[in-house]
Length: 143
Length: 380
Image 1 (cartoon, rainbow over the protein chains, first blue to last red):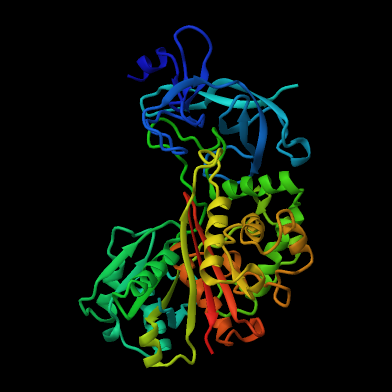
Image 2: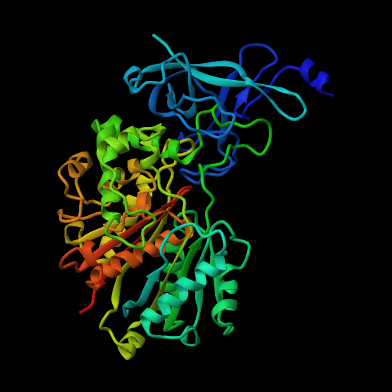
C-alpha cells in the first residue's frame, strides 16, 4: 500500500489548500456575501453577521504582509527548531498562519508589515500512516 | 437585588502532588474554605466544581465522597483556563437567582509538566512546526508581538513582568516558587518562543482553591466581619474579529467583560486597589493592563517600567506571584485569584498586603475563548 500512496500526488495539508488538476495550488477562503468576512475552510453560516447559506468560495491572494510572529525555540519532540511562526494578512482579505522561511530566525531580521508571498512545497518530508506525501504552504519574504 | 458574599475562601499551597488525585486536592481546599467560613458541608446547598483535565470524571461528586455525601446538586464545569472562575460565577448566579443561600465553589487541577497546546490535527500529518506553532508560549508570544507592533513594546518590558511577579511570590508561602529572578536571569533563561523565555511562562502545577458563597440574608446571619462582597461577576466569549481564526483574540473578550464589570460594580478602573489578572505568559500581562483600563492604550510598557503595577505602586498586579510564579493549575486558577484578592480585602495578606485595599478585581482567560472578571469589595 505505501508504494501506491507514493505514486499518487501529494495531499493538501489543510482542506483550504486546493490542488487543481491543471494550474497552480492556491489557498481558498469562504467569503460571506452579506458582510464580506473571509474564513478559512468550508462553512455554511457566517460567524460575523450570522447570515445563513451566503458563503462563496474565493481564491485567496498569494501576496501578503507580516502581521505578527514569534520565534519558536522549543516545540514538541522531533520538531526542528528554531523557526518563525507567522501571522500573515493576505491582500484582498484573509489571515493565515504558517512558517516564515528564507529568513533568519532573529527579531532584528524580521519587520512587521514586511511583504511576503505564499509558496507551496512538500510538507517537510512528513507522511501519514498510509505513506502519503503532503503539499504545504509557506511564507517567504518578497521584495 | 441583594448582594452575594464570600464568607470563606482558601487554597492549598500549589505544587506537585503525584501521590494524590484530583478529588484529594479538591477535598482539601473545600474543607479549608468551609473552615474559613465557619460552616460545615452539611450546611451547603449546592456545589460547583471546576476542573478541566478530568471534565468527564465527576470530580465534584468524588470530592463529596471524601467530605460528606449530602445529596446536594453538583455541577461539574469546564471552560478552559476560565474553568474555576466559571464555577464561582455559576455558584454566584444561583444565589443571585434566589435559589440557594449557601453554596460552595471548588476549582482543582492536576497537571503534567511540559508544553501545552496539542501538536495539532486529528487526521493527516502533524501541523506543529509546519504551519507555525500551536503551543501556548507561541500563541501568546504572537499576541505580545502584536502589541510590540502597535506600541514598540520591548523584550525587556515583557521580561520585567516576570521579575515583578516572581518578586511578589517571595512573600506568598502558598506560591509554587519563592525565588527572586532578576531581569538578566529572566532574559537569559531558555528561550521558548521569542519573546517568552522559560521564566516568562506560567508554571504547570497541581492546585486547588475553594470559596463559600452566601446570600445577604445568610451572610448577615453568619456574620459579616470577614466577608467580601461580590460587586460584579461577568463572563464573556470572544466576538468575531478578523484574525481570530488563526490568532485567538484574548483582548476583545477582556475589554467587553471589563466594561460590563465596571458598570455592574458601579466603579471605574481608578477605584481598583489591586488586580489578579491572567499572566499565563509575561506577554499576556502587558496586554491586560490596557484591556482592563488600568492605563490608556499604548501605556502598558511605561506602567511596568515605572513600577505602577508592582506592590507599593498605583495598582499592584498579581501580588500572589501570578500564574508565572504561584503556578497555574488550570481549573483552580480562577478561584485562587479570588482567594488572593479576598485575602487583601480582609487585611490578611501578610508581607504582600496592599495597604488599605477596598476594591479588587480578578480576571482569567480561557483560550478559545472565555473571559471571566469579578470585582470584590471589603465589607467592613
